[in-house]
Length: 242
Ligand code: GLP
Image 1: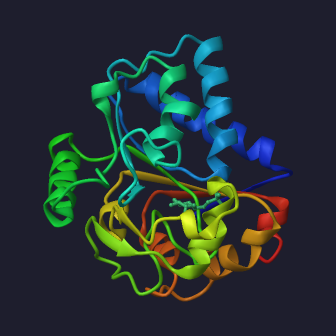
Image 2 (image 1 turned 45 degrees about the horizontal axis):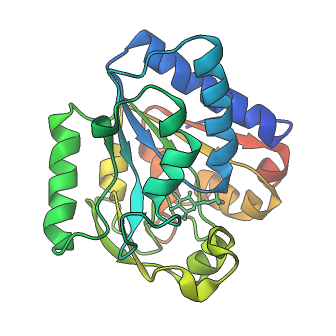
Image 3 (image 1 turned 120 degrees about the vertical axis):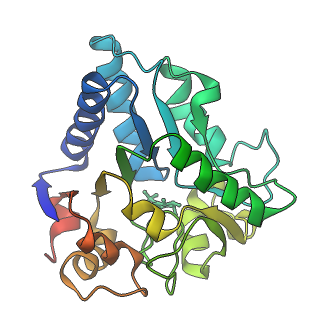
């Protein structure tokens, strides 16, 4: 694991966006692993700005998002699909058919999860996986006790995660779905590069445990210590306990 500390979230977002842009320039057919959450809003804003300024061609890229809520109807503004459209997909020239998220409305979540893993494999695996960290230490939605070798599957969200994500549901915790489909920890570890982004003081304690504590299924982000090519980019408030 390499750790990079920058003064503030704006600088962190610039570094993360630059890494993605360079990945796509170097390999136009890149397979990107994407993430959601408030941290990523600035990363995507920066990436869109770079893509426009440098006319970056995403038309041959494919993307796989880490996760999606279960049970939100297709057009829901709260779905991660809607988030990705709003913050990234509609601003770059990635083809809609090349943007993949797990289908949280699938009748059979187990087969949907297996289909998603197979699609990642068929795409040749993920070149660069972007990830945030939840206050429970999750990556994707791999809540505490997710096996470190887990594959994509449905998971019940921890109460703390639903509270943390309520901000994106107008502050209404009850509106946050109770379940999600998430790429497993084992799937995330198979990406050729992982870029973990953490900003803000609320992430300081969990980031320190994930990066410097023992590897444990209680903190799925700690599994990234096993990854041969993982970069953690944190701002000073998030890095305060390292
Ligand atoms: C959600 C996502 C995670 C993300 C986390 C952090 O739980 N499923 O992938 O890392 O939010 O969110 P934020 O960036 O809003 O702190």
